Image (cartoon, rainbow, N blue to C red; front, side, top):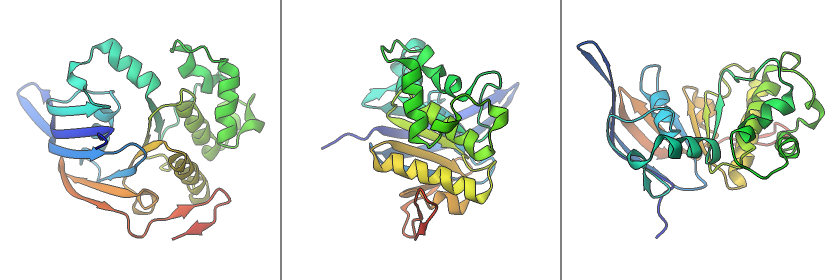
Length: 241
């Protein structure tokens, strides 16, 4: 029997400010298999972004267990976690986080500068940009791009190290509906090609592009169900429900 890519067991996360302890996650458990497309939904303050940060090795849990690729994350060193963040995880954020003084291709090359890859960095970045339809924007700067194009650059940057998992935190939050649909079509295609996608969103329509929705409320899992009315977004923005 194949082991899950991600296994979270009775996970808690709390923050302490003086004598005040705030529990953000209060005993969360679930599994995600390799190749799944999972949306994590919840209102503001539900704990969904905190959960994504823990899953992506950007934060640590307070208690419980997080198993990634069969390894207990709590047993890993800071260097181990940094390696996993760089090589096994790709991040796409709502705010894009592109460096304004670097060109598009230079922004996408950044993760390669922190890895010991033997790849030709520029060629790898070009290939990632081709995968999101931006080969014609290589030498542009971020301020010359639309919001949708910036997010596609961010996806290319997330792809360039060929990670196992792509985390997308509100990837359509700053986009108009047409640009958001383009971004979701790319994420769905990447999933069809074998990438595991974990999407954090509060938007119902965006979550319906996933195969499964985990709903979180007040730090607890409210429901975990497959998407029965899934939206498939084609590259040409044709919708199939």
